[in-house]
Length: 328
Length: 121
Image (cartoon, rainbow over all chains, first blue to last red; front, side, top):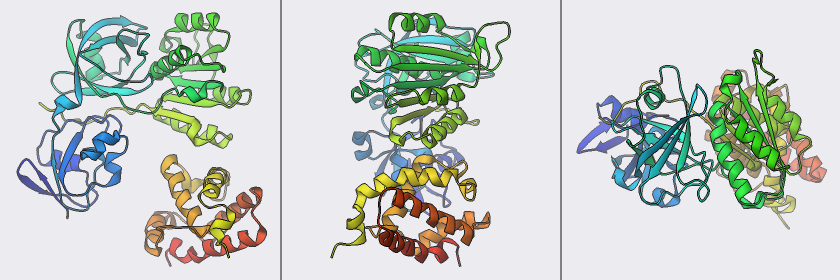
């Protein structure tokens, strides 16, 4: 069994167990959220020993070279010494400046970080409450266009973080941000290609950022934004997106729901609509954001329809793991 | 004399073939169910390793990791007919890319050489 050294103690890790699970089992409070290698809440640093490559997927090269790794993805086969990183290096202090309801279910949270906070529209980060509860959200804002960072927070039934955002968070309160990460971003080389942006629920947030970043960079190809929700109440930013489509002839906005009630919204599966659109597109590039089943399913169908994998950007919104431990 | 790997185009040929091959595998009713729910990025990386090996290129496959990597599928019923299907789809992919029949036969023979490891016998 590989030995794990942490805070002056040694733990025997059963084969296949992650560093995160090992430390939690032995009573160490290690911050974590998605437990799938996405949120980077469980970032740690190795001081001695070899890291499995899997433990550093998604980290910046500068972080990887300094031994940073994700504890939930690290299943060492050899002895390893680890420590909690100096969080000041990886988190940014920020102030909440505005809370604006976009619908009954979605709150736009505007945040002003202290100092520089480099990010690209469509990337995601983790927001931290001061007691160590953290959740990942995508950036819907665009640097150079929007003065502040903007996130779309959906009220999750019994959600600890989203419930707090809706019921207790107020402008002026402080919040911490992880460094922005993720490669669901616009690339200038796509300038003449047609973009297929498909999202469910708050999967619209990164797409809204990517769409406006493409416009900022003078995108010339067509842009199709498809937003799906269960019912019309799950749609939001409809007026803004309708205005954008009116002002820019190459932007096409389609909303679809499964249950329309007495509204006139199209009733359709948004992934089916996306596949219908695909055949008319010129050199398509796809961005898929939202529920994991939707994202993985549509990704596979677009690939089978002939799209190259490296032209399908996907961001599956993972739910927070049920039994998260907080740092305090 | 050039090697098989050089003759068919090396790493470039692997990149050209891998997505076409994977599409065929995912849509073939005989074998697609073995790939339900797998991570597509990880799977494409594995397919690249497999193609590099059967193309006669530099690879790190061993009989042992072929065994370990397929044991869970053998438990789910993986047998000779599925290996046959994979080799058939491989041949189709290569024929569509214009690889010569003699080279396809050589590649199929390399794929066949790991059959017993894959089926854990």
